[in-house]
Image (cartoon, rainbow, N blue to C red; front, side):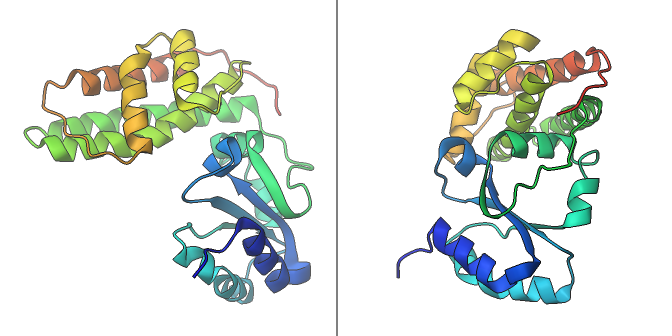
Length: 239
């Protein structure tokens, strides 16, 4: 059986939710690169209740069977009130998205630079601590250490995109170009991070010994990025 196309998915959601649908948006890798095995989507409704969720679940069932994640679901009021809580995610989504149905979701939504900086520092500090914890816990277990590192890469790249935009630069869609631009600004070795990022994208198995130079360099890159963000001046602007 043929897989559900993105256009068919959009028609299914729009037909199911009818007047209750505010916006249906594609974001993530599919919006940045134009294609992805798993397509991320966002549904904004007038309000969210059990009826909306049940209706949406039935409409997206074939989409889920094709291997795509379930859509994120917001009510209109939740969406407009969440830019401070999800500043990084909103910034990344705004930079790379496509509206499949409904209206532009960004009208009236402002993403504060200071909210981005504050969340970015929090997320990076947390990632450093968790990576150190994993480094200790997986000593002597190369497969477990490799898996822990690769699973963290996607989130780190999201933070690098947010950092570049916050610093007034462009955030390239290509992973290698993104890492190179961030490394030049922050001051870390882009080579090992790029190697791990490509391995994560290609879902390759990665085993890391306790003294693996790539893992050591990756941890140093995340640590240096956290320090860099901590030193950024407070900004009052927004986007």
